[in-house]
Amino acid sequence: MNILMLAEVSAAAVLGGAERVLREQALSLSRRGHRLHLITRAPRGDSRSQVRITNDGEGIQEDRYHPSAQNELAFVLSSVRGSVHQVDAVSQRTAIDVGVIHQSLAGLGPVLRRRNRASGWVYVCHSLAHEEYLSRNLGGSLAVGYRIRRAINARLRRWCERVVIRRCHRVVVLSEFMKRRVMAHHAVAVERIRVIPGGADLARFCLPDDPVAVRRQLGLPLNKVILVTVRNLVPRMGLDQFLRAVALLGDEGRDVMVLIGGEGPLREDLQSLAGDLGVADRVRLLGYLPEEQLPHYYQAADLVLMPTHELEGFGLVTVEALACGTPVLGTPVGAIPEVLGKIDPDLIASATDSVALATAIRRLLCRFRDHPGEQEQLSKQGRVVAETEYSWARHGEQLEEVLQEVSGEVKTSING
Image (cartoon, rainbow, N blue to C red; front, side, top):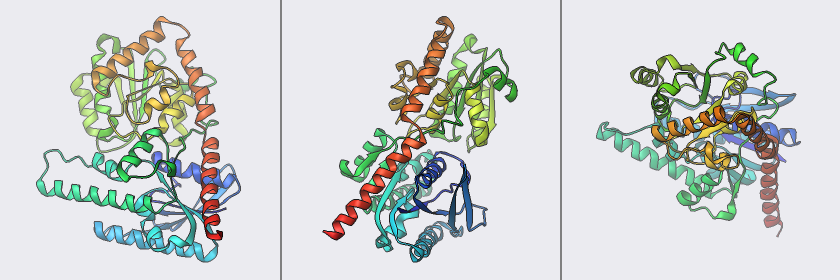
């Protein structure tokens, strides 16, 4: 099949889950013999109009459009024009079997003005656009004008996503949680939605040959209990409650070292909070972790934390850490229980607050200490779950089935 992919993020540099899913889907479909045409919005500050996405010999060209940064309206209009222009360029060269849209603004122009350029359309919903926006732009006690602007912006994002979704033949989500959200907010019929869980690169995220050597390589102490989390430093990730939970461990937390990977607007606030709580000596803010370092930090950890407060559409960190053989403790939010519930109920905290997190951390660490072999058993269970249910190869196979289904239905409808 000739497959067109449209996204507001680039597959060239994986900065978060959206980029990872886009990249892995494109590479997986390419490996399965399909021809990929990838169109993305150029990252801010990157003037390149084309880049090459490569992995294990596979190569995909990413064509980009450059929206205006003059103001919000100019940004939206130029994004619509840019994506439509790139779709025109692709459709002049070849017939498109299926278009796959990863964020609604990237697909708005094409599904409204060039819908017939592809035989069928599929929308990949990572999270609801308006919920993500509201989470990243908290109103608080800010000025009334800002609140009004924020509310209007959220409504427009919801409208844009609904317009795109309703013009697509299928909606792909990464979890049952997101399936329910899409049905509730966009009134999409259940038969149009397919759940295809995210995955991990099982060759890269793997069991360590020597965990002690990994810690030494990273300059980490061998006599500490290491808790790791890798998150965007934004409010919905619950990192403030995680730090408060560490403080609540009291003397039991003296042997704990907390490593927080990721960048975001809360970095300074989290650093200050750690100082105020008296745990600054036990907390390291690592900043952005390059892809090649992520497996090492998961392998070095005794426990990986997912302290999410809201809106966890899937959580790639969860399955990547499990693939490395490291138990993951998460909150009962979004898709986290869907994954961790397959391993052990103790891996799910009772709530998102600091007391619940501290209780869950203490329970697991005591279990590891008092019952030799329990940590190793959870490690094995996590790896098995990752291998059987959360590989990118499995994800790509299931996505291919959806695209073939859409293409076949459209062709049957035309011929019939």
